[in-house]
Length: 156
Image (cartoon, rainbow, N blue to C red; front, side, top):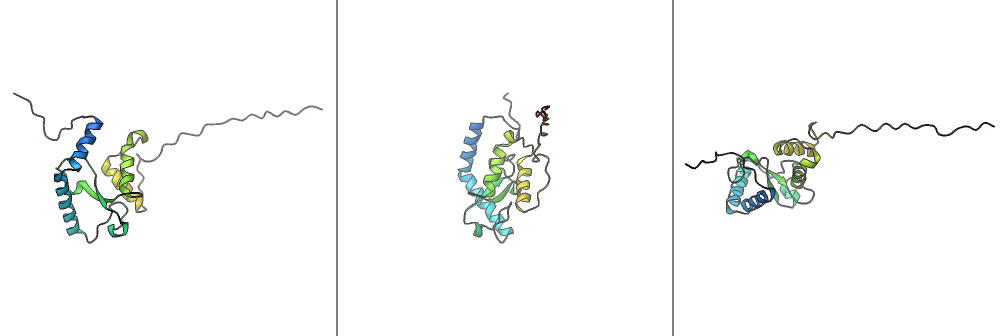
């Protein structure tokens, strides 16, 4: 009898194949339908479309907003409403900043998950940053420089 993989189990795949499957899903009709349904639900709850992080209204931004995944646990069609947030995109927008921080997390030593990172950028953009231990830079102590007085007085 063939063993089935339990649902919800994470399978380790290469980074390039993850990108391919991500792009394939984001360009699929299923995602476009889910995105429209999510936006309709959002519009029914809110008067104006606003960026989750900085709070700018879409009418003031003059660029399309993106749906940002706060978690990839249910990625691929099983996303919950709270897994996604509306963020401003394009140059200077919040989405590129969050994405860059997430992609460079291994080089920078970031230890928080994507959900916490999104909330951190929201608090930072709205002027109330939290002290998050994962983002506090650990500065190495300054090296102690001992200078010796090399000038000697000549006896006259």
